[in-house]
Length: 638
Image (cartoon, rainbow, N blue to C red; front, top):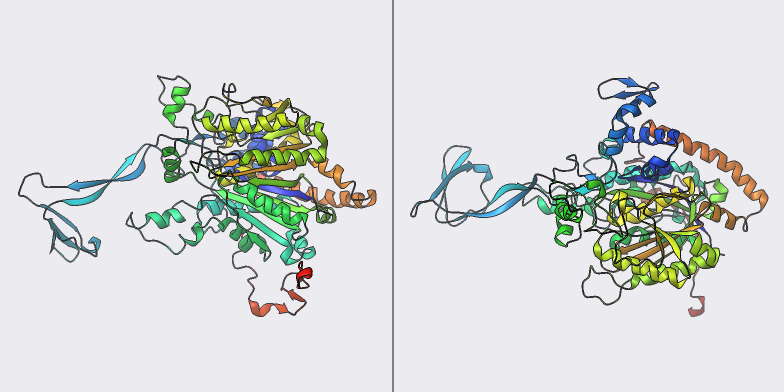
């Protein structure tokens, strides 16, 4: 009997705000929310963006003024909203108008027969003096250099990027200030915040969870797709020598793409269980989700944390994608909208999935999903936000360009639809399922992905499957994009609204539409209309994945066939307390009263502290042992 992987907690941070409790989703459908919920969203963002701090029952601004919630929102509401979603890159990351570069130059004397001469600090002299240099000591600190011929040098310069928009985290949010970040790269700072949010959002006491699960039945599967490429990670390692700076001992180890998983194990969960990092460009999140789902279904893992944390908004990464023709440049956006007398486009509309578009918009995000098998969730009284029974991932086969799309996505989506049809029936698939598209906003993707979606939908008899794309609001967070898609989809069952692709005015003429309904505006379907969602990803290099997501109502209806009324009644009693604890955490986060979990040097174990026999390994701090009664699946061969 397969165990059902259910979602019992989720959280993180992206350009829409905090993911837990549907706060980021609510930012996207903000105008449709009741006033009370709008106020909660704005107060949460006010805390995140450091516009105000909650103290002694009032909101304290930077000017020291104490305001009540209503006055704060009336005063700063529009500014708070403007600090979110896709927008012009804020100087808190870097100045897009003055990016430092160096130009290679060759200096020669003005007059023929003369020599170049200059002074320099002696300590700045190169270790290997060029053959055409003559060095003369001027003082204890300075030397005179005379060059016979040409001096090859790099001259510092700056330039304005042609790409100025991104899905940046809310302006004013600085994860490094929330814990002892110790020069961690930005992606890892975001990991600490996001993974903590997911754990605490569950309302479960993690120590109690560890008491009922064997240490080797906990898993963490997480990654980012590029690594930590800012100056505190691989970026610093690669640039330091060329910039005349020192490479530190942290640049290399903290740059690895598996570091988000390592940080969760070492500093948040203290897990000794299964760990793994799967990387597949844009499909990275779903690759890790697939591993968790398969391990839970067969019983090898009982609880898994799946996540990703990408911080790719750096000048170097932007320039790399730009030279590929992949990003929406300002000049192209102005031309697209036929704006001749305007210096800059509307950056909030840079990403336009399935419309006339000119490239994707890069984003940053840290997203984390806490999964359990259904039996453990029922035992603990965990809130079930949905279930993920399957994830399909396939490659493209032979290709010309490694970055071009191929045939693999036809397999992932069609297999997912066939699987889902077996759970909710043909009508459930075609009439009560929505598609969360990859939707990058490139001209090539709008054609190729829409063809995949249309072919699969019509093959299963669909006439108008709703299609939406969250990158229109968040940008493309690379390997973490699947987490954005997953967590914002959960909000549909909380509020009943399917967000539209409102940055796109109309579907482009070359987009395939048969069997599909491209959702260009927010639409209220009701909380119980959709039974499932299909989350699609098409990644560079031929990395494709589709995840099957079941609604919380559908998940519970399935579990009613597995558990008795008495068992579910006990579950509901336990769940009431869990929900209460979760909401208490949510309100405390809105007030800025919760710090991320970060346990540096906490309960560090050595091998001499383990109790090892041929039957089990007992670890200090864990009630359940690691069982060494391991089955041999190949009894027929021995």
